[in-house]
Image (cartoon, rainbow, N blue to C red; front, side, top):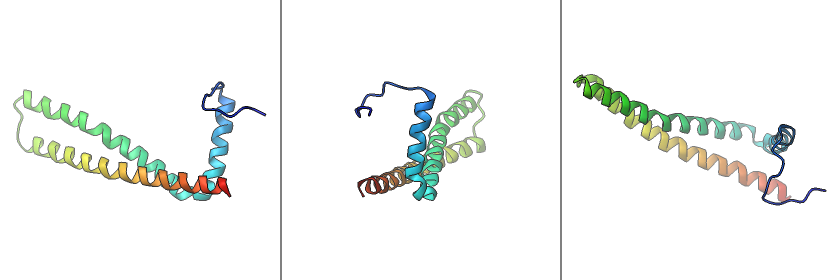
Length: 109
């Protein structure tokens, strides 16, 4: 039997695939919330990547002296992306914690 510790010595694909299979079997019971957790993680990542791009667009417009309605739109989308990121990060943290706690409870029983 392999010794269980915090260090991982084998990062091969077969070992990783086996570990993901065990995790999938544990999370299968909470499939809907697990997928929602993954979706919120992807959405939080996407909304976190939007502000730097929007800042670039705003600065490009400012250097070309194109201020006006487009800048208002960019700032509005920037604020919306920030609020969406806050919300998706909250949902992702909550759902991941919920699923993780249920899996741990299942392992204990």
